[in-house]
Image 1: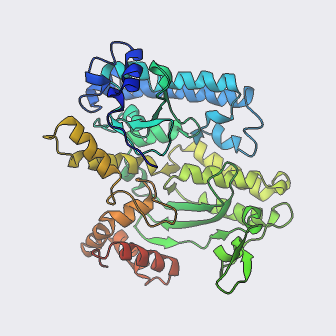
Image 2 (image 1 turned 180 degrees about the horizontal axis):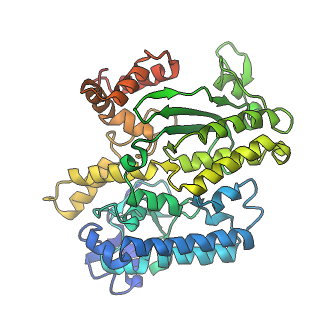
Image 3 (image 1 turned 60 degrees about the horizontal axis):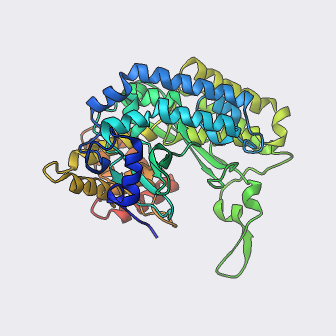
Length: 455
């Protein structure tokens, strides 16, 4: 059962939580923010963006130190620590309890600055759909400009509220996928145009065996956008017969059974596991080396993709003696170290873009509670959520949602008609003129979902 509770903070339990925060947070009726998180509130709570980034850099630096001194080896089993030390993300869940709690407290008080935020703005005002029977889920409406790193951070922050606790103890947040400094700084200071213009850009994507900790990359592909706007799929596409899938059998309409790997990769070349994963490492090394030929490696949630791919590579038993794979990862790391904009993750750009679009559409003449409902309705509407996957909707900022439920394809078509070569090349791929059957099938799905957006 999914629930929404707009009146939570005016209920007896919610009011008790607000009262426990002190007089600052309860200065607004019910402790509910009476407006949005504006630039003025951001400045009062977090100062300027550069100063806030120094605080975040200090927090991440101490986290990286804790990976060496306070690691919970059981929780960290199979995790790619090298990627975490490089700053792809922050996962407090793999630390020992004392260090985990200490850094969580710092994140709450020094990074998010919840006590000061509640005093300046009240408690978060948007109740989000949740199936958790024991917690309420909230977020803020962000009106502030996304050139401030704290605004980018708040836009991705969800707060769980425990009705049975009082004051600050009632509020918690996910701590296993906190944004890294590089991505936060990049999103708040540079546009995608700044990062891509005149560059040879490789877009990179993988598919995994699942979303559990230790899941492996099972397929990966690269496409290239040249400085002149030409787009093409590269040959370095790898499909891997992961043991995490090979042991699972599925049935067919005829009653026969086959492995899940055989079903997923039917008709395609599949790289086998080999001895200790050596055959996979042979192909993965070539794939990573090819990535290093780009000026920029970009992708949607690409930090996850890089971490998962490198984790899969490093966890292969044969990796310790596989010089080609070791050298390929070292080459990638060296290029990223020399140029922090070598990798660009578009996920936060999508989040901020979509949030701004929603905020622009809100009718500000409506009462505040009606504006909140309008914000939530648009955030979870078919215009912003994709329902093209079995098992439920994809995330608001997912590429499936953006492509299937916005006028993105129409805009691409219009740009192509206006003479934009990049758009023309993309249209050629999507129409199947390039001969790529995958692109052709994706287009068929998207236009079936959006019949009014004809090619």
